[in-house]
Image (cartoon, rainbow, N blue to C red; front, side, top):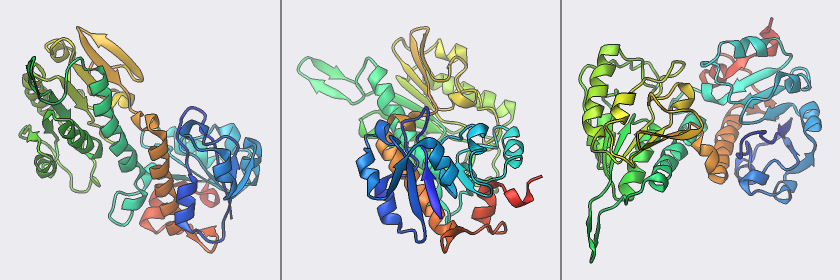
Length: 362
């Protein structure tokens, strides 16, 4: 089986990196790489040369039995792929129902890494957790970079400075990493999450848990938060507003799979925050947790800096590429048997991630 790896058109990350190939030891496969695919992640073509052939993008598409990328390529490019070939990407079909319908019209098979079930068996393949961990870490550094104040308590000859107060909304992978990073930087941290199981994790990291009664939970949601009632969201916003007036930084990470992100930080709350405070909205691409945030933009509202960025993992391309690559190759070690993909659609991992099967496409 020939595996082709494409360069991302608007992303610094790389889908497969040399270090992962060395460790994966996949049998019965060979690699072809698009020239220059690692340039934005500081990985040279020479580093890929030892593992396969470097060639042009069109050649990769035409010759690969399996194409790997992070962001989906255009349908015109997928039409260049061999009949019956496969592609692995992050299609996010839960955000757009037309994605699967478009793929079903093509003569290829498609796997979406973000559809792999979040189970213990598939933990090493979980790209959402890998990228969220980086985003949570970088969100705190980004906030610190924009904050005109210290994070840690400082005692100097010129006077004492109190530690920054950080509020984290949503304690999934990104939120927990944000809490841990803010604590390492010396901040006082409070956090909230609608899942009761998150309380112990928040407390174990040394943060204070902001508890709001009456949250809906679903044990069958696979670790994802579920949509909450407007009544609960209003109570949560009131709790947040109490703390926001004293906060130096608010980091919002709350997202509901396949739904618009819940609005947790209304404009009126932002306007009560101290001048110079910072909000980092990691849910900006799905509508945002902050009413005034704009996706992929840094704005100032009423003296508060609002950073809308759901793709902070792209700002740390070396480690983001390594983790994504490890996730993909762990999936391939599971799915590839004797140099070919095992299309066992009854298998929870393979069947869950294969969003378009050529043999059954209409």
